[in-house]
Image (tube, rainbow, N blue to C red; front, side):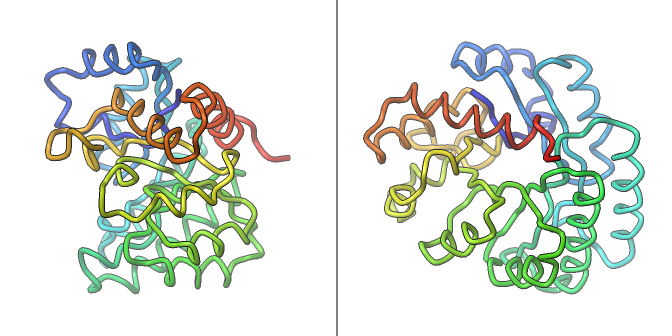
Length: 258
């Protein structure tokens, strides 16, 4: 399986990084996509990739909660330069976050639009962070529909209407993670409607730990719990979930659109 969104480069894993990778492999998770947060973390991301170059793949981007008026343009300059120097598999995570603060919303919008432009210029997918911000995200995607943006809606937790709107763009997959295991998430009815060729698996480690381990540090080995929950909701085998989501992720990240 492929963990399409995991932050194993954060300090949460400094003391047992190799053990975390080993546990993931025992759980049949052998490929990891590391989304970016900001430039300051690039060195640790690259170090992890060089340690496991056949397993760990990187994205470059600026996370919406790291967008600041005085620094975001400098950060985006780094994204634009770095994408020409290294074979990244995606731009992101980018997007808009209206949960933590609205004070930087103007700059978030500008940073998101510039990153989808960079993605289009380099024929890369985007990893979209959309927390309490679907309307904001949709407004920009609709405005820039000329870019034919493709990618993944990370940690998708929207309702049926959000799902249908994203599906109408025709170029996006849904990153499903620990949220679907939460009792009060209401996600089962949405996942039921999804086709298996629309789904990829993710943990967002160390965050969004799935039940029954909520409250503990998340890690990529827990991806199997996400696969099992999807299999339960859709009444299919875990093997089917594993095979199809892996195919979807490979097509998105490793087969450039011509």
